[in-house]
Image (cartoon, rainbow, N blue to C red; front, side, top):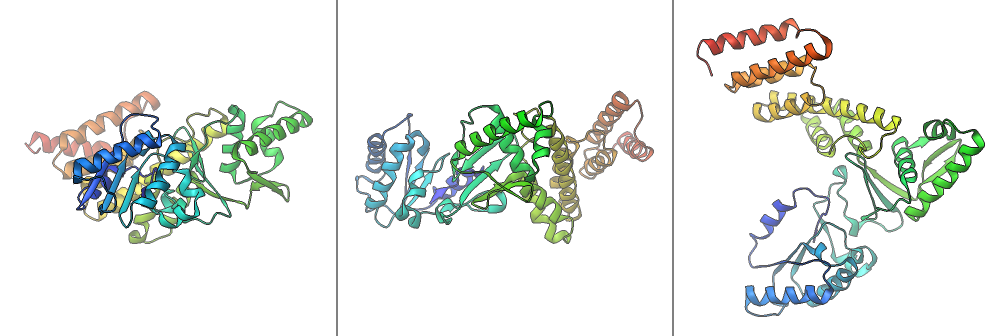
Length: 376
């Protein structure tokens, strides 16, 4: 088993693993370790925890911080371990996908990634068919790309990376749309030359063509299985809108979990800024929808946390401020409710030179009277 490198709550799974009995826990130390050094640390842990250095008596083996071992060296260490470990269960904790798990048919058959949830971009790399390239694109935050589980870090310049994210985000685009976005000041001949050079660089970085050209549109190649967080986020948010409250809960949770921060903060182009604002608005609405479901389900603390996050996406929304004030009031936190009102009033005065709406002012006045009457 490999704890999924992209799973944020690895520590929770580690705690659960360490409760298994009997278990041998190895936490590698140092950096840029060779496979022989990793083997030495493994043997030392075996002797310390079991009194012997035999793997065939081990029931469960947990290997933590495996990324301290050089990638090429770990690709030697892990297959050797798989042969010598016998029937023991081995759990690997690392921040990268071991290449040997992808390239070795034997290891692929023995390996599972945990947990897996394609809706959250948690793929079981070992159990995927090898006929298609898996391209994972994470555009929330600064932006990251994984090709068959391996990170792409060298883009041979800023422009190829920006074009890559544009083509992925658009899904399909005409040549004129691309030229207008990237090279609006160049004539068609010049723009065509720069485009083809840049597109070729993208193909070289990926080791495969990102797009095909059909019916006047550049589209993602059918040889690529694309897993794109922004697209999945939008899909989950849109799906929740047509479902019953009970059914909408899961896609809303997934949408909120996928949003890791503003869209492509490492790129400053106009199309990115527009898309960033659009996705931020969708995120805010997803937070509000989820908060309402929790509020209706009798979970005021969870609802309050979501409303507060939603306010951060738009500090001028009076309906959100009122929702937070009501929940603070319900939780006997009236002073906090009044602080929310004062922040809203200050924001509206400074930005728009206007006071909060009458219904918010009336709510604040009610809460003030309750505070004056001695309520918390």
